[in-house]
Length: 327
Image: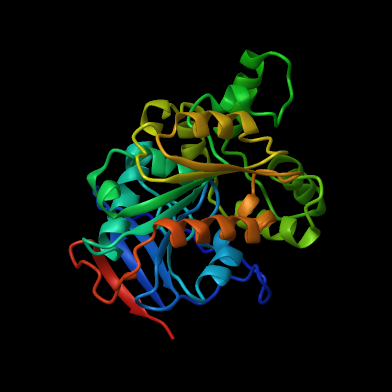
C-alpha cells in the first residue's frame, strides 16, 4: 500500500505559514488517485483555484492564500505525490494525469454554471495547458494565470547549468531532473543551492528557508518521476486551446523557465491579457513577490470573474471520497 507523503515542515507563524483551511476534501481523480484539496475564504466569494509546481505542495501558496482568502474562495490542492496526495503507481506520471486531477478538483468544487480563475505555477501552469481542451475548463474557467512556466523544450532553454551547447545543457538538465539522489536535510549549503536554482539574487533568507523546506520534503521517487515528465514536455499544441483570458508572469532572473518561455506563451495564447515581467526575480515568483502575483489574480477576478460568486457548500459526491471540516 502506498503511503501519502508527509506535509512539508513550515514556519509556525508569519506570512509563509500555511493558513488553516476552512474545509479539506479528498478528491478522486479519473484513475482513482486521491487528491488532497483545501478550501479557504468565505462561501459565495469569487473563486480562485491554485495549482502548485514540481516538488512543491499547497504550502507553497501560503502568502497568496492569506492575501486572497479575505474576500475570495480559494481552492488549492496537492499534485499527485506531493504534500498529502499519495504517490501514483509507475504509470501515473503524465501530463494527462495532471490534467485529470485538475479536472476532478474543478468538477468537485466549482458547480456547473459557476466559474473560477485558475492560476498555476511552473508544473501547475503546465497542468492548465495540459487540460486546455477539456470541456470542464471551457465551462468553468473564467480566466487563467500562467506563472513561471513553459510549454516545451525546458531542458534546452534552462540556464541552471549554463553550458554553451543546447544539446549538452539538455543532457545535463535531463540527468538532474530524473535523479533520485536524496537531498538530505536543509543546510546552509542546500539553501545557497536553492537560491541559485530557483530564486533571484536578492531573495531574502526567510523566503529561501521556506522554499528549501518545501522542496526537500518531496519524496525523491516523486521528484524523479515528475522530473522525467518535465524533461520530455511538449505542450505547444495545447497553448492555443487556452481560449479563456490568460495572464503570463515571469521573473527576469528565472533560470528554470527563462523569459523566452513567457514571451512564447504570450504570443501563442488566443487571449493573452498581458505579460508581467518581475525584475530580478527567479522561478519562485509567488513566494518572492506574492503581492505582484496576487494583484494579477485579483485583476482577472474583477475583470472576468462571475459576479455571483461560487457556492461551494455541496461538493459533488462522485468526485469526493472524504470530507473533513475544520474550524
